Length: 289
Image (cartoon, rainbow, N blue to C red; front, side):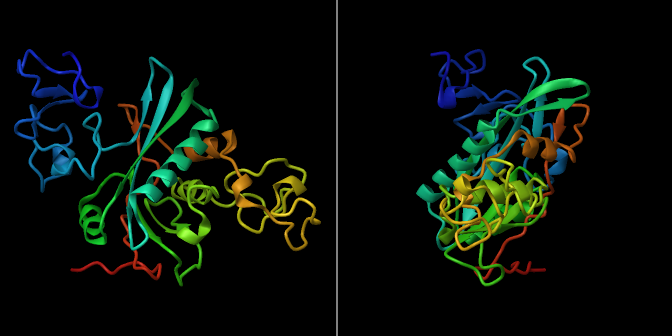
């Protein structure tokens, strides 16, 4: 059998029983739970074995190519892939909600069919969003050693006293999502993730501009068809945006890449790995010395 776990290629020349699988940048020995070569980024993770994979925990981590998970350019296919792993924790975090939230984010960004120009070359931008649901203790432990902006730590609760709504720090890999914001159906999650990408709210009055972009804030004045009540007069009760009508646009994705610089290997972080963990109140959890 040529292909095995995750549709990755079996390396029969290394093991005839298909116990070694090719993950692109390394081979993983499934019997030993370790890679066949030294991690090329081992110097960034001195606390771990250079032969470890998935941080020793394939349930919580994804590592499809052996990289940390930056945005990457494929010059042959003229594609940029933005990878993001969402780590949900908190009293309202559960697998089904994590799935629909991650799916909404991926769908919104991929539906934009966005393109960006890098070095005079036009690239199609694709988004790959994965997720995991963990305990607060595990999220805290993971954040304490994380160095990649790809990994986002998101607390999920029914409410919070800090903002009374979902929020994400601008340009950072951490956020807080409220279940009463109708996660998975209201575009709240894609909106907050965009804050993590470094985007701020768009113009406060979008009447005459058509469908609102993903960065239109709640309370934004919009055309009647995008309001909670299409029959209401803009600016009156019910005349503000129904957030479920927002969409990720080409402009939103272009704005993301204004702050991105790719290295010589075609890799780049979008945002910073500040790794904040929040209390249920929405306040940042104090780190232990």
